[in-house]
Image (cartoon, rainbow, N blue to C red; front, side):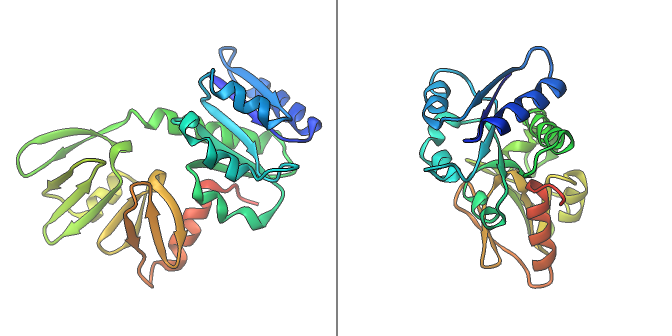
Length: 231
């Protein structure tokens, strides 16, 4: 596995790389950068499995840098590091795994690393769903959201919708930890959330999911806690 680290302060890069060497396996390759041009050059030739990215770089915004190079980061588990609270909402414009607040320490980095590993492992987990026509095995990571429809649920995947005889509450229990109830009729895959604003969730496929007034505070907290360390 290849792990990349970018921060414009050499001491932070060295600190982070040293911490990662202690918690990663011997098979992991760790690459540290203080110059984003060097990082961009390498991600075009090496597979980047996990990327620790500083947000406020000397002459560029790390979030914008990610957005401009997302084609080369397909599948990369992105972890932002920052000392500035004002960027917290902006990180949802990209597909991130975790947000680590400075100053860094081993506990914070370990949490972020394990979250990225968990997400990598979860991508292959499946559930068995009984649809109106057949029994299907589907990857949990392929589900964008689930919508209640009277006595049925519509399971929305990237290119199809499966109709199943199930209760939304039962699906919520089966998918606990990765899915969030935003409304009495909607259950959303947190990994598919692209942005949060105006009491709505915008998913990676462009779908806008409503958030009920009663759930607004809970949803906001759950969204931020999913990617943000406890401080």
